[in-house]
Image 1 (tube, helix red, strand yellow):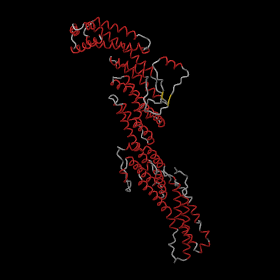
Image 2 (cartoon, one colour; image 1 turned 180 degrees about the horizontal axis):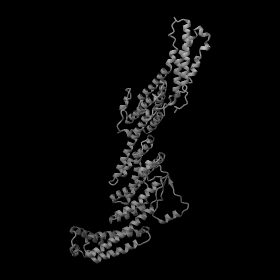
Image 3 (tube, helix red, strand yellow; image 1 turned 120 degrees about the horizontal axis):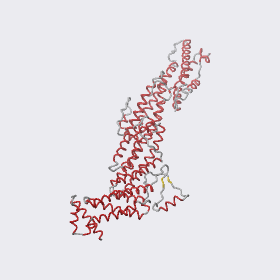
Image 4 (cartoon, one colour; image 1 turned 30 degrees about the vertical axis):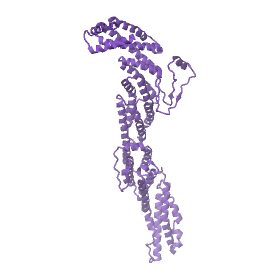
Length: 619
């Protein structure tokens, strides 16, 4: 009870000292006020009392400071040392207002020096405790399972000496876990040290020791995932295949960091600096800042790098990773010190959106720049058609992500030349974007079709390419985006090209087979001569077409068969009728084998040999 009363009395004295301010006679004024109140205060604040207190603390603390063994290795010594530090800190605080007294000022200098040495030793103890308890996490395939009791050194030694002891690792199946970065007992000891250092005004020294060790811990833990420290220029100089590998490593690393390591560090900071929220926030930011910037810089390098179309899918992976981790960014980096990191993550997320939109613009440019000088042999499928359609189908596997990316963008103006695609005006921004790319492709294909001198081959080329386009769109997310009306109109295009082909290829042949122009008034010899000339022309035209078109390509088996059946269904009846007319002419009938080179069956057989190109236009 006496000690408590004395402490209350000292507290009152401290308050009065603060109220009086600093004067030359402040110490004497305070002592004179209290001299008649309680002699114990005069004794405590007298020169002899201050020196006695300081000498006692110096003996205790110096003994601990000079010890070679870690103080924390003996719990009794550890807490005795901490108690002595508490007393010293309180003494310095009490004597500071009385520093104008020369004797007390001299003792105060000694006390502050002793306090500084105490803090240096506590900093060493702090660092040693972290080194003892921390081991970098091996997150390449599993999570270290720590033994629950870290308080007994003998148990630690027995583990090290046990040759049969095998560390256990469990595969990471859930990123949403918090790992105890340090044993609970160690965290408690660290908190006790941190509390003393903060109270003594050595928060910077404590933070430096904490931050340096925890940063090393994080860096080593993530280095085991293969994460390299790469600058933006280094990322841009990488070969694409190498960068793809780095992106895979980065995705795993940032998930581990944001979902395991950083939450664990947040918890550790809150527990060690319990009661000092500002210090906890600042230390967390300092520990995680470097690694966070490293991770974000990589994503930024991807965002501002090449916008070559083949990079879309990996850029989408990076974008989706950052997007999916935004709740973690907002939760973990929510304090005043970490706000800039969260804002930077949001900015890079938006730049990745811009990169994706830029890649689609580059795809449009690639289609436009594809030259129309050289024709695909046989009117087959053009590589640009195959590339674009397979590319868009693959892109549509990320439809939800792309819709999010294009949601706020300005949609391109689709040129609906036939008044079609009106439904797209109410479609999603992604649907409009896809329709625009198809429009660019259509213009490119039409330009390429003009390279062919033969109208029939031009129709075959367009028929091949649009048949492929329609097939790729059907039963796919791309078809859902473009709509049924778009598909119907493009299917109609294929039919129209089919009609155009037959008209340009076979109308001349069919015209020859018409015998209506040979009137009944024509003499038998005149009719015979006219029919012979028509038959000769038919043979010539038919031979030429079959020879030419046998090397043409219809890549789709069903379309190829439909085209043959259609040609045969039109030509065979006309030719059969023409042969029947020939058989009615006696002069020709006598020498039928000489004049008629093809039977109806022969014509059909030759037609079935059409479009057997070398397959250069196949999928």
